[in-house]
Image 1 (tube, helix red, strand yellow):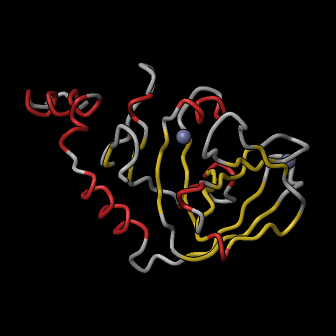
Image 2 (tube, rainbow, N blue to C red):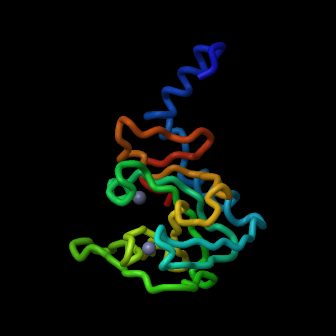
Length: 176
Ligand SMILES: [Zn+2]
Ligand SMILES: [Zn+2]
């Protein structure tokens, strides 16, 4: 926080951490997701796991660039949120190695998480409600610096030690 921040700035900053999320209507969020992902930002990215056993390539427009604070992501990340970029499934392929996949049997519509059987790196998720997408973990990109989050999701499950990035649309669950 800059030293000359006004009281209004401080209020806004504090609200952003909790109740300020209510001011965003879901339709705004969807619009921002589409604006962030679908406006001619076609790209090709490569990535892989920590031990280099698994490699992948993805291409096309990013469908979503987000940071997810859900409790499940906290397990996977080691306590933090997970930074994710959804890419079209049709233009995604593993180019080396075979991942393992896991989905919980106690959930009705479980996410499938794919990971390296050797080093355990979580590479991506496949979500039933977004069957045309693979949701890549940004940390597995060869160049994570290309990533710029547009939305924060599942902020209702944030821990007190988590922080929202600046300039993202935030949702207690998802924009949908
Ligand atoms: Zn590995
Ligand atoms: Zn999550």
